[in-house]
Length: 129
Image (cartoon, rainbow, N blue to C red):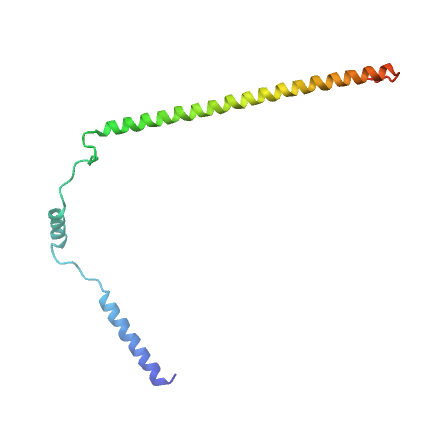
């Protein structure tokens, strides 16, 4: 880069910085600007609206919606509790069946052991318990 081109780049940069600082300088608002702006905002603002109701069921009051939701939640809780209780009853019945099967298996095993001991003792083999 030669000296001439470097000087032009510096000059262009200085010119840009001067324009930028001029464009960004602080300017005070005109007298009464805030008052006029606030007045326009008040004039342009729509009047406050009443609480919106469901337009597809205007005869159904808001308290009824809350009551309906509460009843729905209660019904769902009762249903979930019923399903849970059914599962608990089924699990208890399964455990009872397994316990019965285990007890039967233990009785069969006990009888088989007693029979084996009896045969061994008849042949003269003594088993110490």
